[in-house]
Image 1 (cartoon, one colour):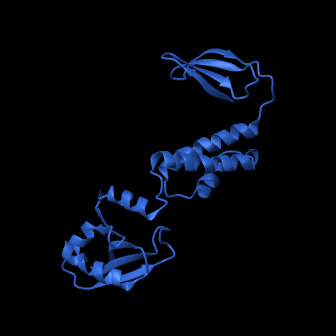
Image 2 (spheres, rainbow, N blue to C red):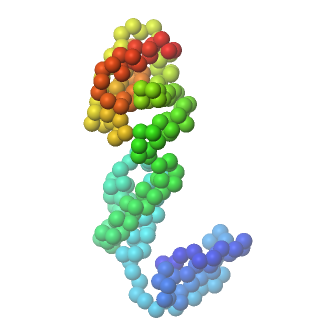
Image 3 (cartoon, rainbow, N blue to C red):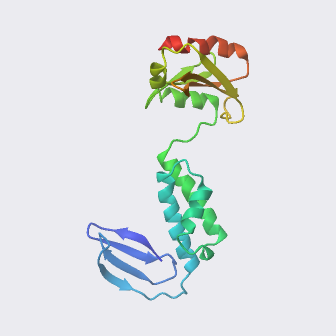
Length: 212
């Protein structure tokens, strides 16, 4: 197995991943023509390393294409396409790390504190059909589906429910406001709340229909 050592305008130089090995080759820039090859490998072929590399590269591609898929499912699915008995445990762990690293390159770091969450939310005030509002005084983040609110603006009945288990660690509760229209329940807004006090909901949620 080779790794890229040097790249010019017309060619690419590759060298064996084993640093003590003499194996190397030079190919055209597009990789279609081998210009020079030195196959004096002084070690045995390591199939496990090759298949681990293939698995890791496949997982890196899927990490971007399927951002919401769990790493375990990506690894299992891609491992079925190659000889899984040739991939070591360390190879699986390496593929898992590659998925997380690739996703971190394409997506921002998750906030670790409530202050960081407020900053991130304030920078995402317009995203698709969502409107994100930050109430620093009451420590609340509101996420509104503006299209759904407009479509249901003549509806008079609204319902709300809170959950704690799936709430981000920087907050204590996610409160969802929904309505019933055209035979379906439509979510209108989500609120990230700093505590379980009912007064926060009474002062903030009732303004929802009037805001639009």
